[in-house]
Amino acid sequence: MIDWDLASFALGAGLIAAFNPCGFAMLPAYLAYFLGLESDGDGDASHNVLRGLAVGLTLTAGFVTFFTVIGILTQTVVDAGTIEQRIPYATVGFGVLLVPLGVAMLKGYEPKLRLPSMNRGTGSRELPSIFAFGISYAVVSLSCTAPIFFGTVIGSFTSRGTVDGVSVFVAYALGMSLVVMVLTLAMAVGRSSVAANMRRVLPYVNRVSGGLLVVAGIYLTLYGWWEIKVLDDPTESNWLVDRSLDAQNRVQNWVVDSGETRLALAAAFIIGTSLLWALRSNFTTNARWLAFGAVAASYMTFEFSYGADLAILPTIRTVADAPGRVANWFAHPGRWPVVFEIMAAALLGVLVFFSARGRLQHVRSDHDTG
Image 1 (cartoon, rainbow, N blue to C red):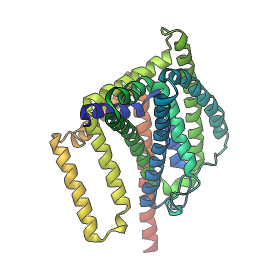
Image 2 (cartoon, helix red, strand yellow; image 1 turned 30 degrees about the vertical axis):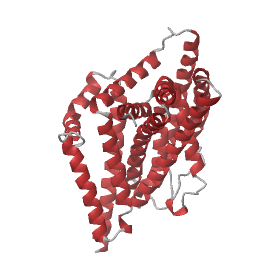
Image 3 (spheres, rainbow, N blue to C red; image 1 turned 90 degrees about the horizontal axis):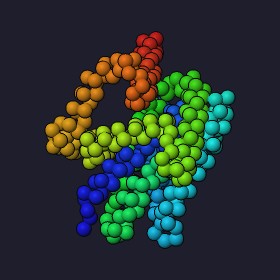
């Protein structure tokens, strides 16, 4: 029988692992670059959502593949401790490689990485690049999450057996993938909002991505170097690392307080609804209403089983707390969430601006035509 408490714990560990300081440092650059890439059909919101789902699934396949290989190695020929000692060197290597790439992008270089277009099928040659990013994300993430991964996920195979081991592995991977999928879908929707101005915005997004890559590369290099030094002196400390770990601990506390199952359900509903909406043209009108009705009924059942605290009340609290959070940017600029809150507010502002501008241009066009 599956130990559901252990699987739930692994799900929470996966959600937390997605926000680990090492892997998460790479996500802003990836998401910004995803927002700025040109492709056919940028004005089609359904198309962008499907592409976002394809990219998110490919990323997931990349880090799941890496974790699977590591799990097989630790169960057969390599000791987990040996891998833990080598991973920091890989983190430093990725950091060193990211810095010159970011500098080149700041100077105008555009990497030949294009995201998959759904009309070319899943065999598109762009997918390996996304898959490779998923592997690199998993490598640097493992540098920050090795104790959890080896102790909880890999250790469950030895202490609990195959059934519990597989369930824990799946739950851990599911937790990470839900976060990545939701973030990618958010960017896919963002592409639709700025589609009309994409060519004008593209050069700036590419340079912003380059700047974020430089920051991520420097951070990963410093973090990996600190981990290497810790191998010789466990008392070694670093201000940047300490702040990052503090942020991760706060995220961990938030996940525990919110409930990992509740967060996973909310993310799953977002992904499922997005997919259903993107595929709506493939259904008859009656089937479409039936499908959306079933999703809505399922959502409301879960929502009120949590006392409306699955998404409704958290959304209301977030909106109500917004003025106070903005005031804290100036009163307490050293708080760890400030940077993320400012980035989220700036991104939301850009999306709202371009969305409103596009609608205004559409209204003017209709007026001129009429």
